[in-house]
Image 1 (spheres, rainbow, N blue to C red):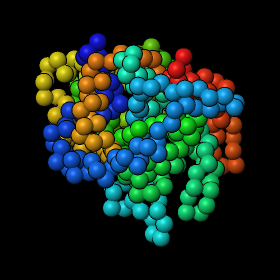
Image 2 (cartoon, one colour; image 1 turned 90 degrees about the vertical axis):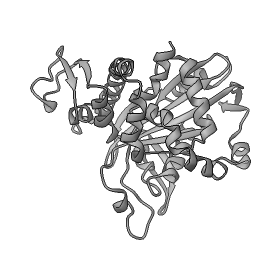
Image 3 (cartoon, one colour; image 1 turned 135 degrees about the horizontal axis):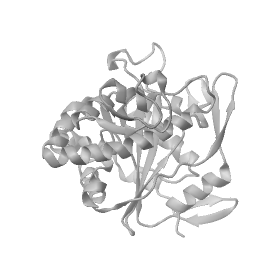
Image 4 (cartoon, rainbow, N blue to C red; image 1 turned 90 degrees about the horizontal axis):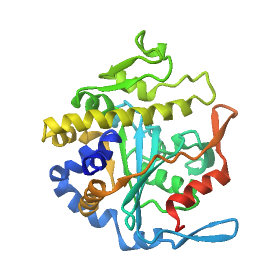
Length: 323
């Protein structure tokens, strides 16, 4: 169980690399500790309960959470900002919250659809946009991730999210190939990815094939992001197997991974926070992924995903609140 839970970080495409690489950026993080996490911010984010239909539901007392954001941009950082306004090109394709129940020693991933429609304040006023676009507000770094955190909190009925970690999906082929490739059994035909991608075939993903598998969707289909989210879950499960085998043969694997992907990641975790996260992931039970259900409709320009609010609430209540 210890090895399985430690590899949760590798399952999210680079997080293990960050955790294992604490030594490499400890000096930088120590300087940022006070600026990133203040007593005022901690007090502001604390809440004893969530409210649903005029009733209070107490939050679990011993709980913490981390927002993971996988972005899809390949443009160099120096070309990120548009002239005259705060905008970047890092759309958020992978969005999940890791919820740690410290009393029961479990961690539950909550996966959130990128196409969920949200209201967010922009330089042009309040806008109703897909969640994926929220990350384009700001520089594409910590400020953008912080706006994403606030927005996901609102989606989850105000459930507190303590920290964030964003990483570019450019890390996928790097980490994928570092563990020797990832082998999957296809659950459907995917001719767009190659002639070998037929239902039932066993394929080892290498290089950009891994990136295409986790990013591919048919934009001609209204709800095809749901299929892509299932690809994410399938890939992460297979990646765990490959990472476990690679780690068993190379004790320096995590350090090598960190060196590969360091420049693609940003987080507000402090050194102390990272240390605690490592300990929790090494010892906690990994629960099944929770994916709040909803429905796709065609908006004026793009596909729009609307949560089934009662089902969404049940997901939130079961993960964040006392039974």
